[in-house]
Image (cartoon, rainbow, N blue to C red; front, side, top):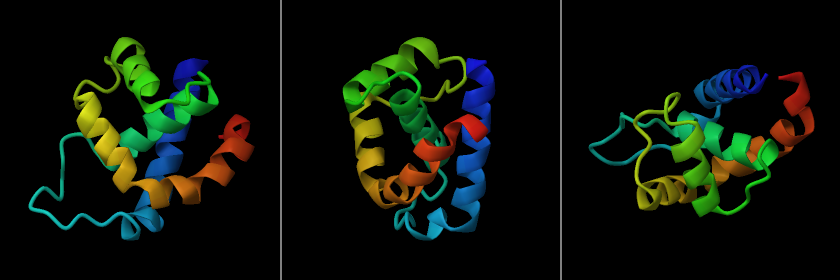
Length: 106
């Protein structure tokens, strides 16, 4: 059950990212295609908050390292993960209401 929700959430975020969110989080560096994509960071964040009730970034990162490492093998360090989420704040704001209200239907 947990895998189905994680996968559905990932595909939902990828769809929204491809249509609209990529314009809110444009990269202006020479690393426009990082190994660990923005969609993966957003998926981990929303899954940990909604399903695991983890609200601190450190707790979310530790959960991902411990329980999601086989699904997200290129998880960056805590500092890089935290920095990535900080840059994605506009995407988090856009997705929050839809994901938290409709997670069971994803």
